[in-house]
Length: 265
Image (cartoon, rainbow, N blue to C red):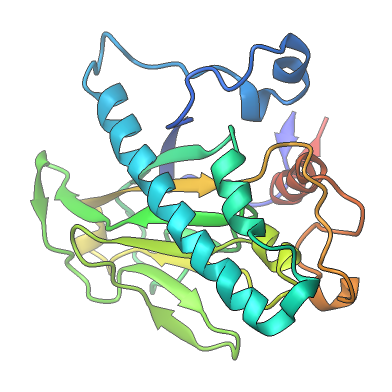
């Protein structure tokens, strides 16, 4: 099997569900939707402290996400009125059993070309409802236990506004940031829209000496949620990514992943 396109070799990840070690006991669901319902696997011997830290922070991020979703719902209702089912996004976040926590490690970059905004992670939308993000930190490759300042003020997270302007995103220490995903764009009739974002590596040769770490939680619907816009909103007005009318979240997610990783078997 080969992957068509450019392999993402600049970062590594560890995924787990921060809320439920075993999201379901239904064997059929686990088999068909293994990417959402497979039980967590923790490196208990190699890193025994990881599980509790991951869960504590991830559950806090989901809890704050419920509040953020509630405020998003209020804003959308102010624009669409009764056409928008009350509490849509808050319900998605509250009832989901499939949130994905992702520890992200960005490796040192050895190449010396000029850095684009997407030199550490390419431009993309998240396809979940909301993404909670912690502030990132840098460490030196010679001593990864000690945090260092970013060697390049342009390095880090960038986002693109609705008008196409690129904006550097700086998340203060001990703060959370939230990104809007494609699912929310669909369900809210595009009153709120998915946020394109990318990550820029430091300039050379500083990029060879540092690495970057952060933690994200993707708050997504359960697999069977039907992704349709509010009544009276045309499909063309909310269209984004791999979505088309009548898809469930699992179908939409599958199409999105296949779009990123087209496989030739």
